[in-house]
Length: 329
Image 1: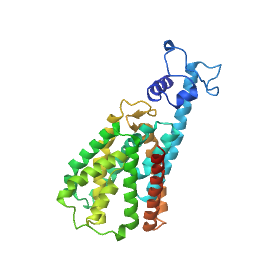
Image 2: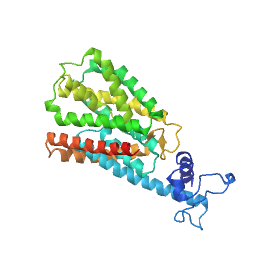
Image 3: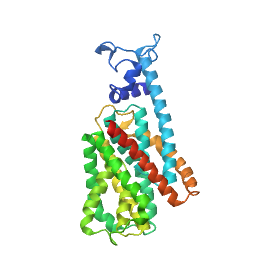
Image 4: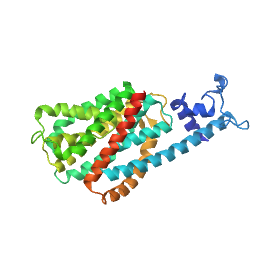
């Protein structure tokens, strides 16, 4: 029964006043702390079971449900990432958000938990992508060096803000970034360039903006840096390769920052390290990789322009979802 005892202890810390309490009908408590709470759900409590057995049943059923939901979410996010050619939070965060809604995670914890978990998922893919791109000599290391300090500073600021900001801040930033990306994808061929290089006096504010916004919404920052570089006339291959390095600078300090920002918060799902759900990372990573390969194969049968328009449509739909939740808040 040691695994059950460990899980029960974890739920005591993480799910106080949550859906487990509602289903089981009593508080997690020591026998000396008084009688169980009232309003017991007869479906969860059996007269023939001791409170400890009832708790073990609830814990086991919730862990199985969590695993099934996360495997399904990993398959969906991986397939979408493969189809649209992105591996960042613009795909993963909306999927994770719905998962945490199903798990009754409190609203004020959902978006930081989505962002932190997404950044942790981006770490291996961004490192692999950057390692591959640097072999092609397409990475603009001069720009990366100039961006490194402001991007990391922006990431740190974003993770500090994540501890105190209301959910509306995360959703608003996500909607703004997603809409900007959608507009860029739809009208990219018609947009004018702003020169042949990123101006030196704009590199600091650009870096801070990338780091702060990317860390707040759980994306690697590649889409933002790619937009900035192409707006300033840099070649698309250079923009993509350099953006892979930006993903490394955002994801590693970002994930660590979210772990610290949510370390002592109550109401998080089981097996969370601060605002990073390790259960989600372990479940989404393998299924996401497998589903991404299927999505990539499917994408080869569709034109690149059509994929860009489909991705823009997907982002607009996500913006509508988050916008509706903001209006109803």
